[in-house]
Image (cartoon, rainbow, N blue to C red):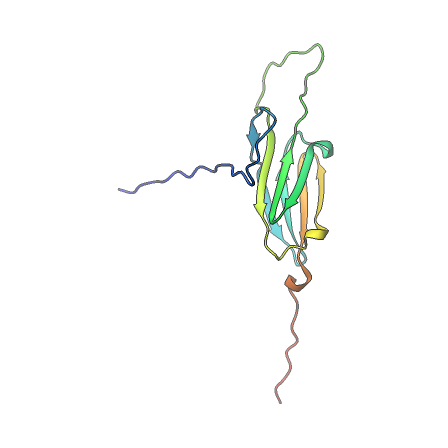
Length: 133
């Protein structure tokens, strides 16, 4: 008989920070891919716009935080909701391969794109091979 293990992804706190908003916090789904010059993160944060996102880098910890504005429409009552209201937060530990001074962030339609350029000394380079004559 095999034993299955359930692993729960728990949110880690860095530096003992506490939340000041009494809301649920979701961990956004992130796709990560690598190009020759950078590592790119795509974070899904539906409902978040450029005014509601914070990207901070402290020491080697990159933190993404997205805040959703309450969407209450005058004269209407909520009939059905497919997902719960809440904010988003996710942290990543960066290595020395990332050039911290050139990190860029853009958001469109609830998708945050973070471009983490590689440090010059970490970029892939072609090495010429000569004949040993």
